Length: 429
Ligand code: SDX
Image 1 (cartoon, rainbow, N blue to C red):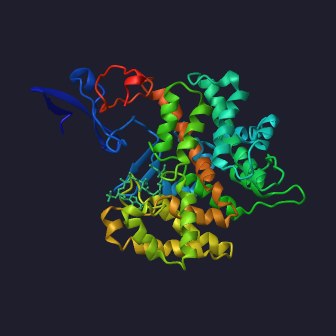
Image 2 (tube, rainbow, N blue to C red; image 1 turned 30 degrees about the vertical axis):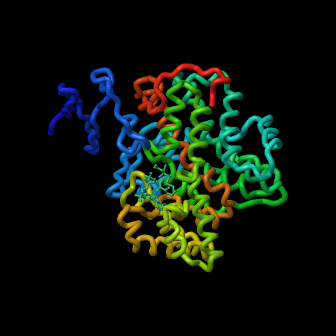
Image 3 (cartoon, protein in one colour; image 1 turned 180 degrees about the vertical axis):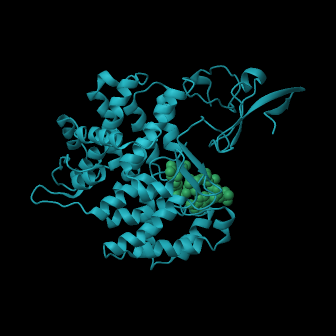
C-alpha cells in the first residue's frame, strides 16, 4: 500500500504522506499543502476532513461500531458505571478498585457549588431553558477557581476535571428545582454519582426519598451511551475553543452551547415534541414521513440520520431495548414509545430513508426513558450534556497533551467583491 498520495498541480507533482490509524483508517496528510502549493482544500461541514488524531473513541459508521478506548459500547453499557466510564475516557484505562474509589471520593467531595452561585438562579425567569443556565453556570465556575485556569498546568487540570464532572450534576439538578419552584436539594455524600443526581432532582426536604435502584442502573447506562463520540460538533467546539488556550470552564460551556442545537444534542427534546405532535394527529406516522420527505416542509424526522452512522447507531439499539425493559419494570405504558416504533418501522420501509441510509440515532428513543424517569423534556439535552462531559474533558486534555499546540484557524475561499474605493455618501445610490 503506497505511503504517499500524488497530487498533480500546475505541471508539478506533489507527494502527500498517507496516515494510517490503528483501525486501518486512511488520511492524506495535507498539513504542508498550502506551504508547498499555495492551494488549500475546501470541505464545508468537514465531512471529509480529520481535525486531529485521537486515541479516545473509535466509530465505524458503516458497521455501526462504537468503542471507548477500545471497549465496545455494548459491554460498557451493560457492565460498567458512568463514573468508571468517565475515568476510562479521561485517563485511558479502566481503573483499579483503588483508583475508582479515589475518583469516586473526588466526585463526592466536590459536588457542592459555591453558595453565592445559588443567587445566579434568582436572575433567570422560571421559563429559562436549562441549557442556557447550564452553560452560563459552568462558565461562571471559572470565577471561583482563578488560580487553576492554566490549561497547560497538569496539576491544575487534574484538580478541575473531577470538580467539573461533579458540579455540573449539581447545577443541572438545581436548575430543575428552581424551574418548578422547589427548594434545591443539596448532594448527599453517601450516594454515588447517578443516585446523587436523582436524589437532587426528585427529593424534597419534607420527607425521606429512596432512590430507585432500577432508575440508577438505567441512568448509568444512558450517560455511558452519551459519554463520547469522537469529533462531533460539540466536541470539535470544545477542542477549537480550547485551542485558543481558553480555560477548561469556557471550553466546556462552549461545547454545551453547540450541543443545544436541534441538529445535535437538542434533537432529543425535538423528538419528544415531534412524537407528541404525531400523537395529537391521531398517531398518524405517515404524515410525518411524508413531511420529512418533502424538502419544502422544513420538517425533518428528528432523531433520524447521522453524519457518520450509515447503519444502525449502536446506542439507539441499546436504548430501544432498554425502553421496553424499563417501562415494564416501572409498570408503565408510554403511547409515545409505540408511536416511535411505528415511525421507525415506516421510515425503514421507505426508500427515501433507506436510500439515504437514515436510521434512528441516539436521540430517537432516549427521551422515552427520561420521561419515564420523571425528567421533563426541556432537561433532555441537559442529560445529554451530563453524559457527554467526560468525553469533552478527555478530548480537551488530549488536545492539550498530544496536539500540535496551535490555535485552530481554518482558511477560506473568498468569493466577495474585488478591491474598490470608498464612495462618499452623497455619491451612493
Ligand atoms: C447527534 O456527530 C455526532 O456524532 C452527533 C451525535 C453525538 O453523539 O455527538 O451522534 C449526536 O447529534 C445525533 C443527531 C441528532 N440530530 C437529529 O436527529 C436531527 C435530524 N437529523 C438531521 O438533521 C441530520 O441527519 C444530521 C444533522 C444528523 C446529519 O446531517 P448531515 O450528515 O449533514 O446529512 P444531510 O443534512 O446532508 O442529509 C443528507 C440527506 C439530505 O437529503 P438530500 O439532500 O440527499 O435529498 O438526508 C436528508 C437530507 O435532507 N436527511 C433527512 C434527515 N436527515 C438527513 N431527511 C429527513 N429527516 C432527517 N432526519
